[in-house]
Image (tube, rainbow, N blue to C red; front, side):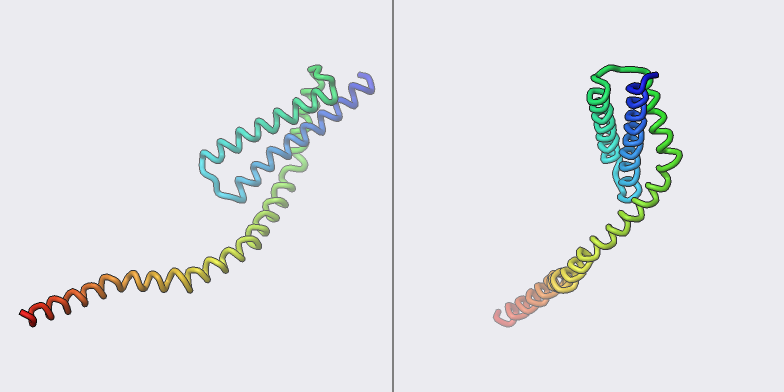
Length: 150
């Protein structure tokens, strides 16, 4: 193996690490946010598009578009190394960061929601609930007044 081939092997090892990180990015999103099946399918599709783009970019940029066995070996070993040594720690770290950010960012929305509920929604709800009672009382009064007029 020449120096050029070793350099290319190392580059594709790093490409494998990047692909592993992209995979974990989508795993972190799934852990942090509840998603429906259709969103999961869309995320899977986006993962494969991103992975393909990263791999194609690397092949054309660093190996002039030539496919060699050591490219795939480097990429696979990069993914395996990432999954064995980095994945668990990064997932835990980024999941905690996202959960923390969700709490911080959701607080203003909770305050606004509670304000709207207390000062706008609840008074309107009370008025709407009392409309049938009010109309029934008026109907009874109208009926009584009509009877007395006859």
